[in-house]
Image (tube, rainbow, N blue to C red; front, side, top):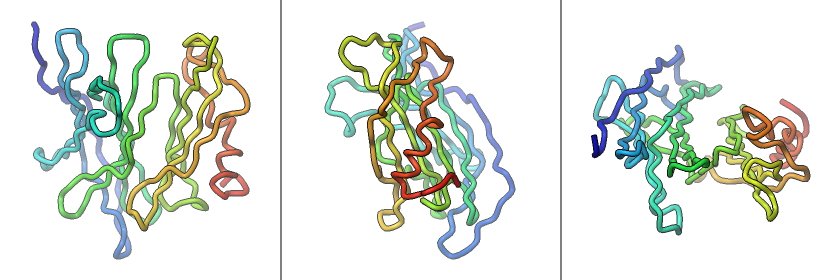
Length: 227
């Protein structure tokens, strides 16, 4: 039937035990559920996916569209395949790494990423600037105490050059985002293009760039050895 479908609950997660310590500690992120965005008759997203609290159904974070973060005229709604990972913090409390996907019906997709913090006032806020990664990418939250007390977001996305096919081997652009306490949010600290090409999804089930590039990533973060 044509029209938009209702939101559907797709996941429920329960937080691990933990406590917050210190006056500036981060609260433990409450239990939550993931809600897929609305879709049209072709199963293409028309609204962003949500992460909503279980105990307060009116408190949600909805993945925003690309409006305001892209100069393109096409609206991208990130409503598909919502995923979330709890990120426990060493000093107590936790964040949540949240992602949701846009698809226009072709072979490529784009995921929007968010690092969410629960505020004692009852709000959920995203600490990341807009970060979008394709289906030819890899992303991870690394615990690097020497670089940050918060997990560091690292991404690698393909750099499609002239003469290459979509699923050929590619150079990749590696980026890192680190929490800045003065700005109270994550900022991009560097991006660089790899010196070698890596296999894409035509050869592998999953892109593997970050582990081979770990030494260079740590060096650029000012960490001399593998933590």
